[in-house]
Length: 97
Image (cartoon, rainbow, N blue to C red; front, side, top):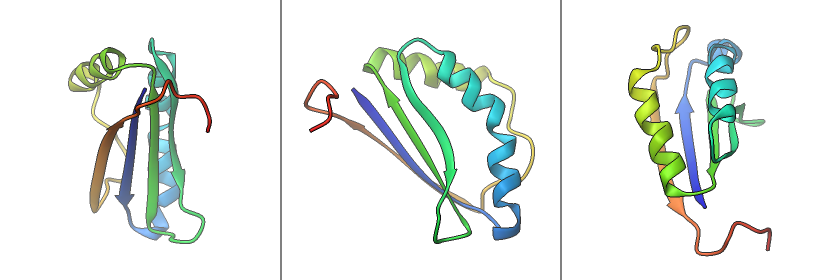
């Protein structure tokens, strides 16, 4: 299983609009083969932070998603001030511990 975790810093007053502007991308991603979870969510404490959480069944599914991002329409709406995105590969089959 592939795990992607991202942190996006946005202007606090634009946080909700930032997440809303990614709604269609979330729907498209969730419909892709191998997508288990894909969500932009707000941090409940830091009002300038949006968290991206993705889980993919395997590396091939995540790679296909990444290729699709290159041809997807650019995101409209507020843009992040900064971002960090990390990918992890689990050593188990993804079952809860």
